Structures are given as C-alpha cells and as structure tokens.
Image 1 (spheres, rainbow, N blue to C red):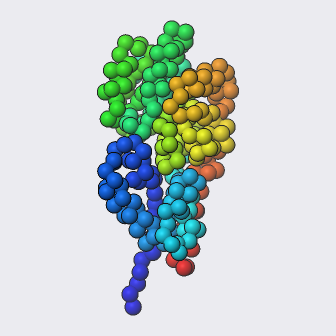
Image 2: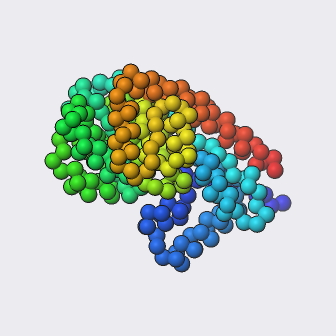
Image 3: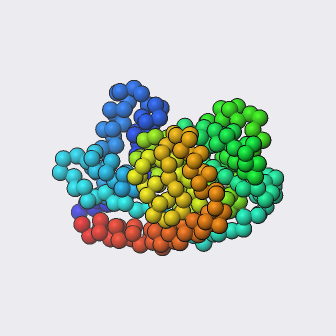
Length: 285
C-alpha cells in the first residue's frame, strides 16, 4: 500500500498578490509563473488555512475546476495572552528612551514598503506645536526607515527606536497609549498583520489605516478597541488620531475591550482547537 500524507497549507500573506501590489514584481512572465505555482499548491493541498475572510475569498477564486471552496478555512494566528498582558504603562522601556509621562503614539513592527508610515510623520509634524504632550515612536527597522528618518529630520516629537528582543515585546507594547496599524491601499485584502492581535492582547487601543471592510478594520471595530480610517489619507489619519486621544479614560477602556476580545478569538487554546478539528476532518477524508 502507498500511504498519502494529507497536507494543510497555511497562508499568512497571499503571494504574489502583495508583491505585485507593491510593484516589487512587474515582469508579466514572472507574475504568471508565480500564479501557476500558487494555484498548483492550493489544488494539491487537502485544506488551506488563511487569516481572514478576504484572504479566503481571494484563494477560493483561484482554485482549479472541481476544487471545493470549502477546503479553505479561516483560522487566526494565536497570540500568547499569558505572555502578553496588560502591563504597566510606565515601565523600563519608557525610562530607557526618555518617554516619561508623555502620551505615546507608537508604530511597532517592520518599517517597509507595505506600511504607510508617511502618515505617522505627517501627524507628528502637524501636532508638534499644538500637542507638546504627545510623542510619536517608530519601534522597528526595515527598508523604508532611512527615508523616513530623512523626512522626519528636526521633529523632536518623533523617535526612531530599533527592534527590541522578543522577550521585551509585552513591555514595548505596554509603553504605548495608542498603537497604529497603517497598511497601504489594497494590501489589507491580502495581508493581516500579526501585530494586530499582539496589540489587543496588551490591552492597548489602536488606530488602523486600512481598506474599509477588511479583517483588520472589522476586528478593531468588533472588539471596540479603536477605529479604522481610510488608507493613505493623511487628514483622515490625523482626525482619527485626535478623536481617539480626546478622551484618555475611554482610550484605556478601548484597550481593555480589545484584550477581552482576543482572549476569546485568538488565544492559543481557541486556535489549537480549530486546527485540531481541521486535522481530524482532513484525516477522516
């Protein structure tokens, strides 16, 4: 007998879609070859797992003739809600970087082409005189950081801090009063940043600059953890930021609501149960 091992294919970002959207791949032949490989993998898998309904619709539309759409399942990435907790705001990270008691607006993650961090710089520049209580922090590194630092030259209310050790993640997230998740237009349909769930687990509110109706926007709104605004829109981003910051007590409660939400949806136990049920059904087939 020949035994065939079932395959479950997990997708974090849909490629080549993200690369094409960013202009990283432009050669039509390369794009066509990548799409053929993509479809072949989907068709040969017994099940495909994705992070959102948008990614599920994307993959289902690419399945070959006769492939059942039901083979595509939505299961989020888990976040360790015991390691990432509602930690103290005034912590060693704040002290180390001279953030003191100021209100910290933070972006933490990859500083690359997918993130509209020019919105962040614009907000810092717009508020540097009218809101001296605010400090903007970009915690991370990546291909776009050097250009952003040049653009932000002279802004005393914007700090660039490099990646921190993994064990400091909870501390970094807790140091912020408000986090931002900015994705360029179109990318929220094919990508769900894992930082979303980590921010929620840390009981911190967030402002998402993403396509309307996508997983990130729906999660933020369903959790009551913040608001979502149109992507690549400087004025909408600034208005959303000020709206959230105008009520500090409500901001804290938004963060707590986000943690309650993620504990029920993306805890290790919840995600493990979903995968266990999927594996059992695949093996049974």
